[in-house]
Image 1 (tube, rainbow, N blue to C red):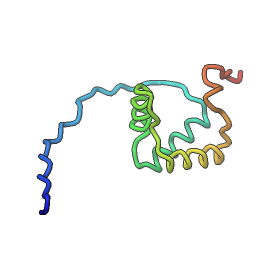
Image 2 (tube, rainbow, N blue to C red):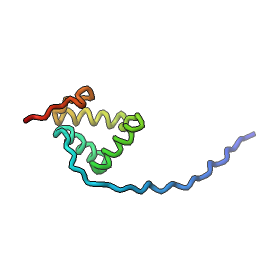
Image 3 (spheres, helix red, strand yellow):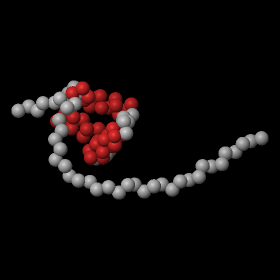
Image 4 (tube, rainbow, N blue to C red):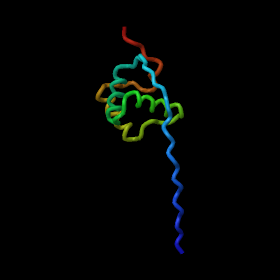
Length: 96
């Protein structure tokens, strides 16, 4: 006796949320920005989309990147001589 499964019902896709974006003049450490820009280029998204994705994941306590992306980040940090890590956050001092 064969047991055939019923196909799952197709759910209509929800339309993407409507949002309003604003320009910001935020300041970011130079090498961090270089890594972020390169990573955005690698994923073929805008810098703003990349940052939004990182933040939305962080707000839920999740990592925004899979192993491949984390490896790419590690490589890019080497390229741009970025040795900063999470332990440095909120302790950076700007050069005068």
